[in-house]
Amino acid sequence: MLDSASNCVVQDATVTWIKDLWLNQPSTEGRVFGFLSIPFDYCVSYRPGTRFGPKAILDQLDGYSTYCIDKRVDFSNYLFENLGSVDISNDIARSHGNIEETVLSVPSHVTPIILGGDHSITDPIFRAILHKYNHRVGLVVFDAHLDCREPVKGKEHSGHWVKTLEDIIDYQAVAQIGINANIYSEQYLQDLERKGVLVVTPYEIRSKGRGDLLKKMNQHFDGKVDAIYFSVDIDVFDQSVAPGTSVPNPSGLMPWEVSDTIFELAQNFSFAGMDITEVSPPLDTQSMTTQVACEIIINFMSGVAKYQ
Ligand SMILES: [Mn+2]
Image (cartoon, rainbow, N blue to C red; front, side, top):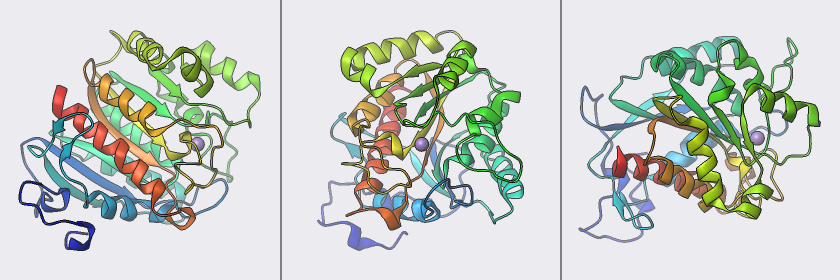
């Protein structure tokens, strides 16, 4: 990962490349972005391949500068630490246990940026995050799917993690943004909204604008949480920009609708970390999907660097 100089198309002494910022040993202090890889796709519900997501995203990220010119923010004062890969196998319960344990072990000065993997990983990740923040942490999910089906023993998949968290989560501190996949009944939506989840569809964002979305999100979390954790399923994006995923989305969000929203939320909320799931390089075209994932990560880091 570190020696892929070919990622950089120009030599330029004024530019700090992300590839040059990786620490050689674990940090004990400072402001750190910690990248954790979870190459787990044994719970994929349709087409596998997301096990190759973390490496593709890290390789792509190496070729970017630390100056987010879109938001006019430099994040080179942060350290970059590769936290390595979680030990996973086809033993789903054991793998999920390892994920939870690993996330729990991330030191508090490190902001975790977690690379999947299928979306089932967010169950163990968020259990660990809730514990670390003493339950004062909200969850913002960008996803085309509600992922709230009833789990069936022995048939685990990535479409029920929002449901399986019910023993531990406060749904009033959850927002699910970009939901539009036509594979649910009204009952699922009503059930989540009755429990207090803020659900906003792409159509509602297109009709009422992103300002309205931001207002709703700020109101939803105001006073309830000390921090927000983001879980981004890449299938929230339109298939024209993110084709490389198990279930492509013909009417999804555009990258800026998500990246600008994350960046702006950093003004009001501290960020507990993020994950990005369902990037499947074998199904991708021209690294388009991987680049969208990097764009989201860069905007997340810019928000943290500017406001926190
Ligand atoms: Mn999804």
